[in-house]
Length: 185
Ligand SMILES: [Fe+2]
Image (cartoon, rainbow, N blue to C red; front, side, top):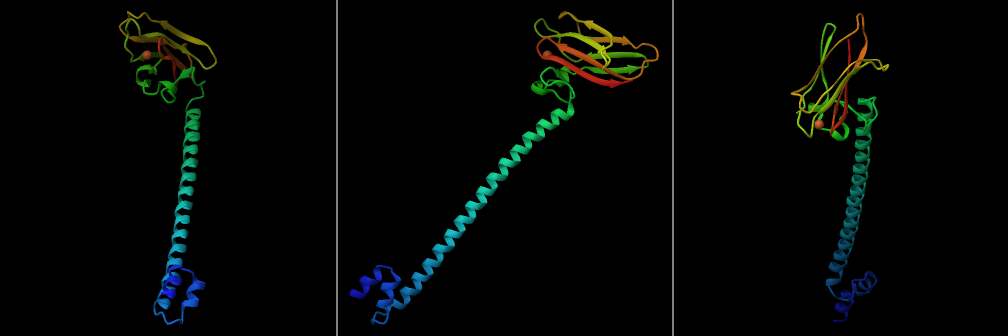
């Protein structure tokens, strides 16, 4: 009985003293203790590895998120050379993303004739205010101001004889600001 109490202590030193005392359980118990310690060590290692992986993944996700944000910002910058929050384009609609179809001016070129269309409803409280056709150097080729009673936001212009180069067509919505389409003739 004394040997059995010692074994209950689960102590290797105690166990060693119990061995050879005539208790046949002692030898088996030592094997069990060694195995349990080995299992516990393996568990610790596994937990450490899993934790390490989790930390690594967490770090990776943070880095990936940062890269995505940076990438997004870079894409917007690369797509539009115009000031964000001031001039919107089909490629860089900014805070008006999703509204580019009804706001970015569509340009048709036929010889020296330029047609600008904004596919936007014309209602009393929401309408296209104005179109302009201007060179990047600031020379205004033409402009047209609309009333909310106009049936559509469409304007036509004739280029000066011999004109070649880049042009900007702009369309201004009373609620969704200034949109620009760049093209070359
Ligand atoms: Fe609008």
